[in-house]
Every structure is written in C-alpha cells, then in structure tokens.
Length: 206
Image (spheres, rainbow, N blue to C red):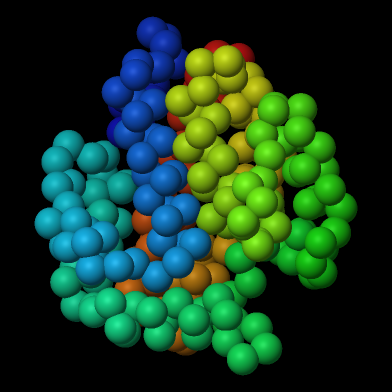
C-alpha cells in the first residue's frame, strides 16, 4: 500500500482490497520464512507484477523477482538451511525471544502466547516451531487482518507488541547475512513492507 493510500485509509477506512493485499504479503513472507520456496512459488515470484506499488515497495518487489530468476529450488534450499538451520544453529535466528532477550523461549514468547490465547488463536499440534518464529508471526498477522472480529485497535496492539520491537531488525540482519542471496531480497521486502504497514496502522483510527 502506498503512503498516499495509507493516508486516505486513515480518513475513509480500510477496504477489503487493502486488507487482502496486506494479508497476502504477510502470508508470502510467512511461507518463505517457514520453508524454502518450491518451483511453483519461485515461478510466481519470477513473474510478479509490481503494478502500482508505492515507491518504497516497488524496488523491493523487483529485487525479489530478480532474485527468484537467479536462483533454483536447490540453491534456495541450501541457502535456507544455512541461514535458519545450520549444524548447530543457522546464521540468523528468526525468533522474537532471541532478539528481545538473547535467549529462546523467554518472557516475550509467554506474553505472545497469552495474547494469542485471548484472541482465540492456538498453534497447530503438528507445528514444531514456537509461536514467536518470524514465519508464525507473519502468518498470524495475515489471519488477524482478515478476521472480521478483530478491530484495528487490537491489530495495531499486536503489531506494536510482537512485530515492531524486533522483526525489522531481523529482516535487516537477513539482508546482511553472509549466506543470503535470494533471502537477502526476502529481507528487503520484509523490512520495507513492515515500514509501510507500521505507518498504515499508525494512521488508521483505533
């Protein structure tokens, strides 16, 4: 969403199209952070239509499309494991607790779980990663945006409490990681998108 559109929404209210676009971007980031891209997803990213994206996001979308054109499923898989898995740990730790405390499974995760419980959200039993994984939080944001029972005030509080304090730093670190090529572009899109969404949520009345 452009800065101009965000300002208009502040006056007139969010549209279903606005929310669908925001939710789909969070969902894409969640998918890319949860697992390496398959051939179908890479093909979609190669042909992504930047369209009328604002000046802040358009270059990031183009970089992601170019990165998809230059990578393969095999190389993206190797990169993903080097960045997030490794032998003992990956180059980048995609967990809120780690960024906020320097340790895993700390108070930020407990607070997140309490908020998710209040919102009526629960982790699937087949999911191994904790709820403060960047992929899980992006997926949660995508669900909250389209949830008709969640108002903008609650959505903004969730963003302010669990996304804004650390995830932009995570995406910046991802861009600077030694192993990052394709995922450097993912990090760029993530950082710029969160900047735009932070502004959007700040402009939208509670």
